Image 1: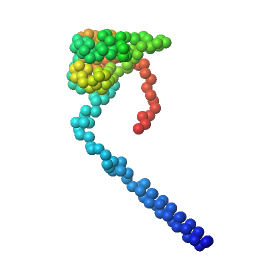
Image 2: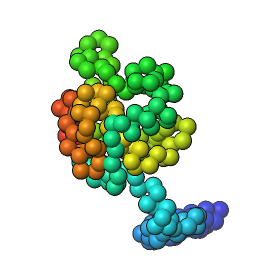
Image 3: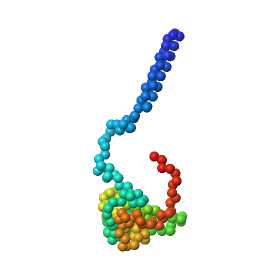
Image 4: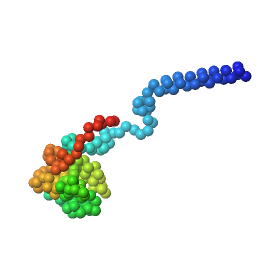
Length: 189
């Protein structure tokens, strides 16, 4: 029996050593992910990538051509936004977009575009991406710039005659632009 146990023991140890070697070699090889071989889907086309690459930075990078006025913005807002935000942007039933100035330090702050948002360019990014709620990404660039012009005018951020476009929008100084503390933690990816 001792000889049988010893040879079985040696066989098990040799088998485990072989597995360690095999798994070691496999783990040092490139993964399917690294080789780009998922076995699913297909590469995205340039057109598909452009359709999803719609982000706008706080500096205005990514803003498209187009322009908007307060007058056209009032018309677009009445037709496509007022059902959720009220005729003047203060009524709801969804978020209030107008008002709230000087309320952020009160027990009941009203966080609106004019009182809370630090960058005007965020308006373009958000409206283009998600509004109107029932038909996101359906507004033209001119309609979006116009709604932004109207909202900024309603919040007393710009004058009524200001034309909003890719050059003027990043230059708008929002009332709460200094109200956020920069996050000094590293961006971990």
